[in-house]
Length: 203
Image 1 (cartoon, rainbow, N blue to C red):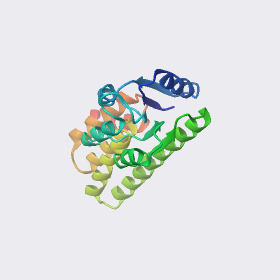
Image 2 (cartoon, rainbow, N blue to C red):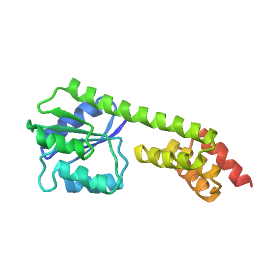
Image 3 (cartoon, rainbow, N blue to C red):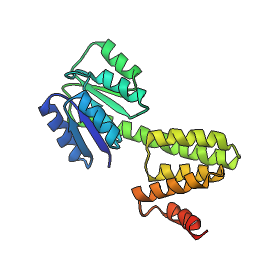
Image 4 (cartoon, helix red, strand yellow):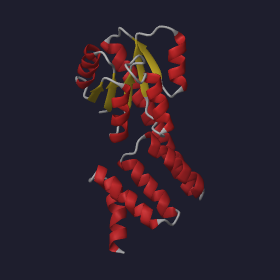
């Protein structure tokens, strides 16, 4: 299941969201401030961010802005008691994906989380297919650009393997090998990466 970061200054809200999500198989990290959250997203890989807009110090919107400035794109669900449109619209401009108002039911939270995780998976798979198509067409520069986008969505073992494939086609075998090693570090059982890296280590 997903690795989710929850940022809310209200402990009871953090604990409630954690309980709901963990009971449904997700791994949850909870943070009280935007400053702490920025440190955490720099350090760890998350599939989804659940974020309150009104935080002490750095606001939720400012956190999103800082993340974008640093090239960190992450599906984000705003969960807030704010009812005026302007702050929510601004958060959406800074990269938020959806909004859920407080108070909320467990069903509503799980539905929103499921929708955002499904959308991310679809965009990853769509890009992966497009990269394969561009490689078949010999459009290697386009494939490399798309591979970078794929990596931004989810820098997991599969993304590393795809990037390695593109690098190999571009003739950069050193970088291809590096990404194959990264793929196996993330998933030692990745069959295609195991097969490809064996070719490098035999030569």
